[in-house]
Length: 94
Image (cartoon, rainbow, N blue to C red; front, side, top):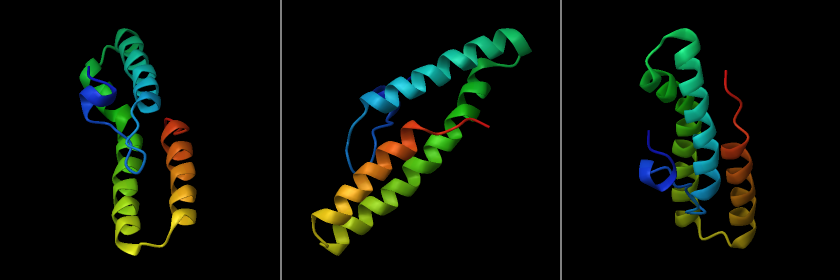
């Protein structure tokens, strides 16, 4: 299982990957444990657990594109950075 930069999961806007690598590492470990408990394939469990983060990253890519196009200054960028960190690193699994 790949995590962080190796998985191409760098956060849009900030281009940071350490926080997401830590979060994804936890998801990978949980998938491995669940694989032993439930007998499911670890890859499918891992990919399912990544879906919420991938959705947020996709949405943040759109925000990044909008910020580039707007030239609105630093305030919207700062708010977007704060939200990007909060959303990607506090995703609750379902």
